[in-house]
Length: 426
Image (cartoon, rainbow, N blue to C red; front, top):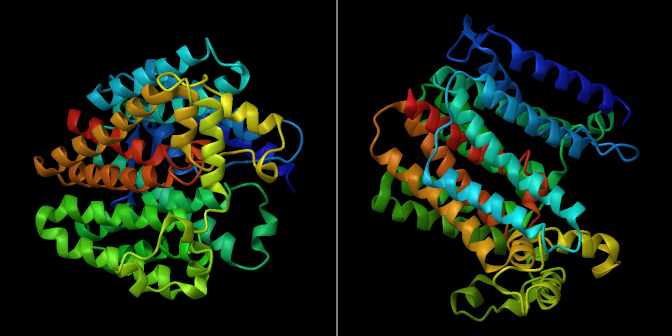
């Protein structure tokens, strides 16, 4: 069955190439399904690419289709920037991100593993190219909505395949792993919540917002639960500012209650789940030692001792951590550190961490400013989605390997931010 992924990859690549080089095409209007709308090639390519980021097309043997698909899409985005008649929009966020990529390239000069370093750079490069391409391609709210609704539809299909018995066996490797999907659902949850507030389809979008919250709870993915919680809190702060504090506090309380009252979550969260309670949390009696980190804390300390200590500013070079973990049997055979910030720290030092955090904070702050100072509904929607979803996804980077799945995770907040820039230009 995995062999079909080669066919799927070939089809979607050829369709993407066709769309990118077309002068114009026709798609259904997302605001009125009975109407058609004319779009140029870059717009059609954007809708296809943004809608299908959850498709991994992995294969257990032979070519690494996921890596090849990532590289192909990056080449298409670069070519698309030249084909598109509209210019990409530069902001402090895109500039900081470009400087960060340049710093990673510098890291290739002193890394012990340039091959792994190049692959790491490709994973970080994709969200930047998505952001720039979206800012050039998107000028109309219909394209923004078409891309968002398309991505949400694919996410809904992935949930159906994951939870309907036996269907998942018919599509092995087509979608990204459960971890990547759960992080993707953070953006889709916020997108649905924005549509709830700014469209007439209230009930449908509220139900879909709730739907995208459920998998991380049912799968007991603590990282995604925390990311979803922060994304929701950020969304309400964008919308209501200081008036949102009671709502934010309520969301936080719901998160704490979920951690201590849902048995599967509590058992995974704590070393001795039977001996912890909300009362202990309230009194500050729960410490770091009570949290079940699955040896993450020890692994992070080991990696920092090996690659960060003594090289605090620059790290050991991009790709150092991946090379070490792939070339040696460490921590039971783990291949990833389950913390992107620790990996950045070890690979690129304090300079790398500061540059990347500047990118994240600049996107969130800029999105907040745009949301507060713009009356256009599409621009406000893209701004609140970009800022809120990135806050949640950036938090998940602390305990997961989000960058490894950048096609299905980080590309969505940055994609919404890029569409916001394009809509502002229009």
